[in-house]
Length: 254
Image 1 (tube, one colour):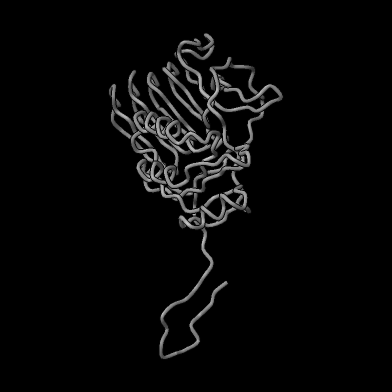
Image 2 (tube, helix red, strand yellow):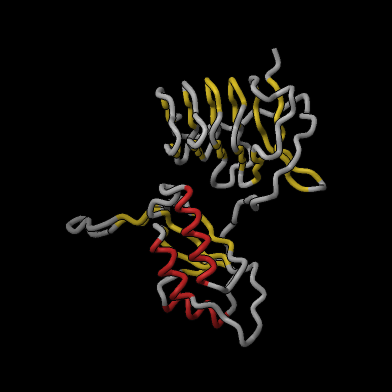
């Protein structure tokens, strides 16, 4: 759709439809301070995770009683503090929606929120399916790192895959919204599908991680990897089933 200024002497503007990539905050509490503490912890772990990202506040998961509300103004201030830009609200009832509009938020009740994964307890690897479906490529080219990553270093491939040509040492952290490929030893933390991409994978020539995670489902070194993948070429994927979501760690096939 395009609406063009009809006056040929004053072509001031065109109005066209546009797509905007948003993140959604699915609230599980009305405690704004708890949200602030959680965001502070996440930012301490991943300082560059948010970068002025436009955001939808989703309150549809809250069971608000008639006399219960949320400090929406305080929440928006917290979100802005942590590099998020609240633009809209989803799932708000009439009173809260009216308050939200007064604060400059738009009604996003019809917005579709993609499935995201809650952070889960470490899970055991299970037998991988023989035929893994092809994974869609992200639109941006992969971020390539050709130097070893030392303890304390962090790399985040926002909106794309991450390729590390050498070692990820213990204490280092690699994060990607897409896949992670390590063409060396993975000893640190690897977090793929950081924004909920359940189709993301982690690949390593030598799999010895402190932590692996896909779309929020993680496993730490406290839960030792099976001998058929520990220290060997292996891949990590996510499988959903009746009992929940599990990480599958499987050796490369020759």
